[in-house]
Each structure stands twice: as C-alpha cells, then as structure tokens.
Amino acid sequence: MSASFPSLPCLPCPHGSACCAYGVTVSEEEAAGLRSRHGEDKVYRTRWGEWRTRIRNRRCVFLVDNLCVVHDDPQYPAVCRGFPWTDAETGGPYEFDQAICPEFVTHPEYVQIGKPTRAAPRRP
Ligand code: SF4
Image (cartoon, rainbow, N blue to C red; front, top):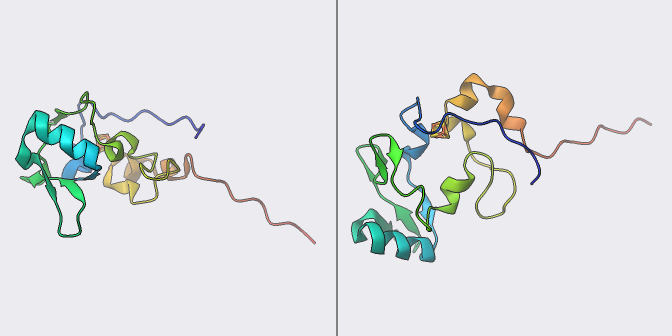
C-alpha cells in the first residue's frame, strides 16, 4: 500500500489507548514468543483455537501505564502494527471499525485514507 497516513498521537495516547480495549488475535508464533517472554497467562487460546491477548481492567494486559510493553518485542502483534490503517491478514486497508480510535471521530475524513477510490460512473 502506498498511501501516506496521518500520524496519530499514540505514544502516549490522549484517549487512554482506547484501541487496546478489545485484545487482538495473535498468530501461533506471536503467541509463543509473547508467552515465553512475558508470561504464559498473557495470551490464551479460545475455544475456536485462536490465540488472543488477554484483557484485564478493560485494557490489554500488555498496556501498562498507558504504554504498550510489547511495542518493541519481535512478536509485537501484526494486528496492532497494522491498526488503524492496514489489515494484518490481507495487507490491504483495515476493514473493521476504525472509530474505536477517537481520532477517527474527530477526523472522519481519515476513514477514506488508503481505501480504493471508486471509479466515476461512465456517462453514456
Ligand atoms: S490508534 Fe488511536 S486510540 Fe489507539 S493509541 Fe493511537 S491515538 Fe490512541
């Protein structure tokens, strides 16, 4: 993707890291690295077999004092790396609700950034 994205005030986040309220899916490799370096209980496997980061006190367990403690870890989750612009699985535009980041509420024009533009309808 070649779009350039506006910079967001993520570090430290003035919104209490609202995007970290949900936990994310992590790959097998990410889960193994995060568990070995940060604790077995920090990620868990759902009944459907996917690994996810655990939530405690309404935020991801890796968020400490409003900062992500795995941001520089080799297994920093691809989902977090891509949000809010890039979908970790497809490498294309992020397809879910970007407004979990309040910057997208105050700047609704951000939602279209990086998205494919529709071709103008052809006139007969
Ligand atoms: S993406 Fe938005 S909510 Fe998440 S840390 Fe950055 S500014 Fe905060």
